[in-house]
Each structure stands twice: as structure tokens, then as C-alpha cells.
Length: 191
Image (cartoon, rainbow, N blue to C red; front, side, top):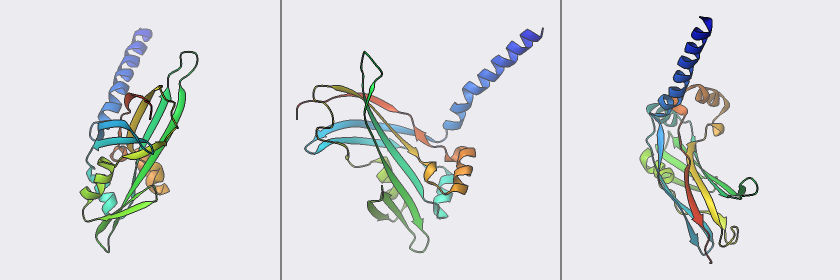
């Protein structure tokens, strides 16, 4: 009797845990609309676009002066039959959006280098939704004739928040916002 009860409780718990991540991510999903690598004169550029909306909690936070950082990550691996896949390249770029209450303008800074000012939050978020062609690898960084597996994702980077907000972000589903890894193959041709 106890063995059956234990088995039934275990099955119920597993079923509950299997549905938990889907419920937490359903409201704040980020969709990767487009992701591809292009060969250019100076190297390899990522062309990507993402579709998402900020929930009310994140909008309130940014309007109250809490800067939000969004990180786009790109990982290139080369499959090998004799060993683990070779990690050829990892690149990330962070866009930090903040609001200045005095000027009533939004500011966006790309990895601390480029800073722009916008009149609306939607305009500032366009830098994240439709980033420009971002140079992820210099010319010659990838081997000609090889095929690489590319993985791209974008997420709200809660590690860049102030410590009190990090604790809140870990316990609050409003602050959990990320896309799934978008995976595709890229073959390096002669340049």
C-alpha cells in the first residue's frame, strides 16, 4: 500500500514540475524572429531580430530609474567526431536602457561604447529588437571550408542589476525574460 502511494505522489510531483517552467515563461517569452551570420569585408556579422514586450513590472522599474540590461549571446561550435565539439567562438553584447526623470528621455548604451537618447521606451527597445549587423568575429577567426553550429539568444541580464534588485529578480517571474537558443549551421566559404 505505501509503495503505491509513494509511486502516485512521485508521479503527481513530476507532472507538476514538468508544467512549472511552461507557466513561468508563457507571459514573458522572447521570440527570435531572425538570426543569421553574414560574411563581410572585416569579418562575420550577426543579423538578428527579436520580438517581445516588456511586462508592467519591468516598465514600472525602468520608469522609476532602474536601468535594465539586455544581453545577446552568440556561440559557435564545430562538431568533431572524435571528441567533444570545439567551442570556436563566444561573443556577447549588452544594451543598457535607462530613464532620466529630469529630461524625460530614455538612454541606451551598447556595451558602454555607443550611447543614444530616445523620446519613447519603444524607440529605445528597438536597439534590442533589431540590433544592427554586429561584428562577432574578425576576418580569419573561423576556418575556411568548415561548418559551424551557431546558437543565438537574447535575455534580460539580471546580474547587472543592483544587488537588492537581483534578489527580487530571482524570486519574481516578472524579471525572467529570455529567448530560447536559436540554432543553425553556417559554412565558412572562401573570402
